[in-house]
Image 1 (cartoon, rainbow, N blue to C red):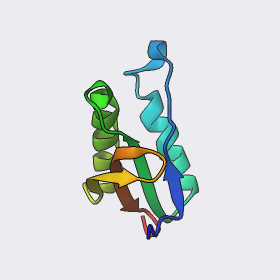
Image 2 (cartoon, one colour):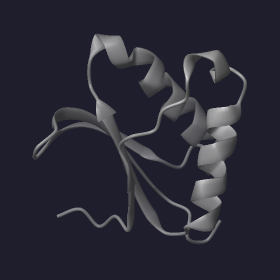
Image 3 (cartoon, helix red, strand yellow):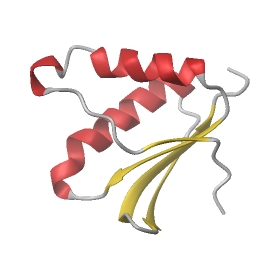
Length: 90
């Protein structure tokens, strides 16, 4: 059973605004507002490599590398890239 208190699955930045740090700034504000155990997941596919790269970079910076990453079969979503971290004491 998943122990997460918060979850992100859908997070989208319009193309003209990508690569400017807007996504990282927005999600950081959300993380800081809601402290606890987080799970983020996205589709595990070749077409989603940029999204997975975004989460790795953002979470590495936000957690100082203290996050977990795994490929996992999720009910209703199928094979997914799953990231977990805890910012309760950050």
